[in-house]
Amino acid sequence: MVSRSGILERHAVLKKTADEIMARKDELGALLSREEGKTLPEGTGEVIRAAQIFDFFPGETLRLTGETVPSARPGVGVEITREPLGVIGIITPWNFPIAIPYWKIAPALAYGNTVVFKPADLVPGSAWALVDILQRAGLPKGVLNLVMGRGSVVGRALLDSPDLAGLTFAGSTGTGKQVALSSIEHNRKFQLERAARIRSSCSVTPISTSRSRRRPTPASSPRASAARPRRASS
Image 1 (spheres, one colour):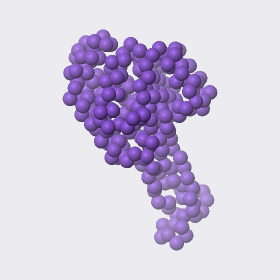
Image 2 (cartoon, one colour):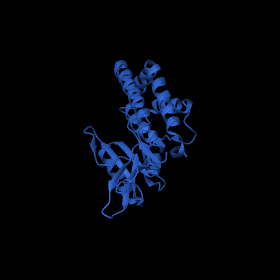
Image 3 (cartoon, one colour):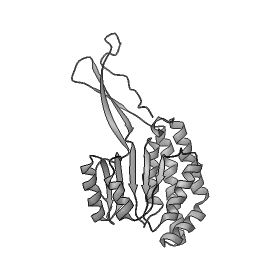
Image 4 (cartoon, helix red, strand yellow):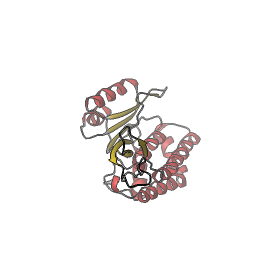
């Protein structure tokens, strides 16, 4: 499982991905422009932004933190650790075929999740290029899964899947409502970016989950009122 891989391994994969995206910015920008219709400078600019996103998140893999908080019960410490959710579904639109998938996929992988990625069917080339770069950077097989097709068929299958622990969507308001309803039905975390206003409909992004644990504090400890922080397994 990717959640059990070392943080340095995840760091290396994301950093290699960022470096290749930047090195191929002109090529990928031309692909985006041909496929989506942006001018070439706009397409290249979107690729540069995507490379910057992937360049940021390798550092986040090294900054995984938890919290210790006091308990109302004497002699008990409370630990809060952040752990991967599991399988994350990602559904993205056609108008930013590189930037939006990248800023959703990078954090999901950085925090140890696996991903099922469904891009808009109008822009398959840009989606395939990202998956290919990540695989050649050393991402294990099965961690990032690309599925293509009509939203009414492939997207619907994702919404109806009980195996997704989280779902993030960018697109129309109408489809966003369907994403919300299906996620509530399956008791999964979800995030919506709907229409041009990019209205977030959920305050919790489906990247990681917090878990608190209570454990007795050793009476012999010189700091008996404080629990020792423990990092979540990754």
